[in-house]
Length: 213
Ligand SMILES: C[S@@+](CC[C@H](N)C(=O)[O-])C[C@H]1O[C@@H](n2cnc3c(N)ncnc32)[C@H](O)[C@@H]1O
Image (tube, rainbow, N blue to C red):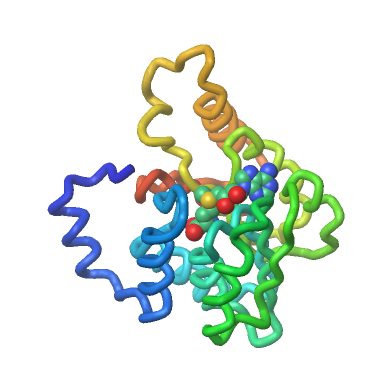
């Protein structure tokens, strides 16, 4: 969901560095051939992810929720020369599609795709992360946060997508709406965690930026 009026959104887009030809093609082909293409980060958020990555120069990035590999390519832009991005998804139908685009990029050999259920895989990853992007099933957001925070270096950054959840975070919640309840609980958890500083950026569907103290 976009929270800005369309004309302001278009203006912001027009004053943001354009996508590379590869990202444009991946974006277009995801919309043409894949289910639920709105899950892809897109131009504006993709450039923000790349900008944050360039600023941090991370050596290790963890992404939870690969989809067609668009955000992985954006995040990989800032990796150090010996850097690596681990990205996890439980949908095996996405891997070949994503990999075909990664292989055309300079980062193909630095993106380490792990197929499986993220809550099962994360505990076995023995790395210290500079940057983490949480962008998978909403009901596990708080669990992902708990699983990764100890693996993030002090000063490292976590980003969590969709934290405004199409505006549902400020509407009455239906008792059956587990996703909205999970997003609300996650946002509260981070807000009251003395181990971090955080800012909720109202970009696209809401991006929570969290710095480990
Ligand atoms: C919103 S999409 C990711 C979009 C991607 N980060 C981007 O910006 O282009 C969420 C992805 O999380 C994956 N996913 C959902 N639940 C998962 C789980 N429990 N373990 C691993 N991946 C999961 C889905 O298959 C889907 O591809």
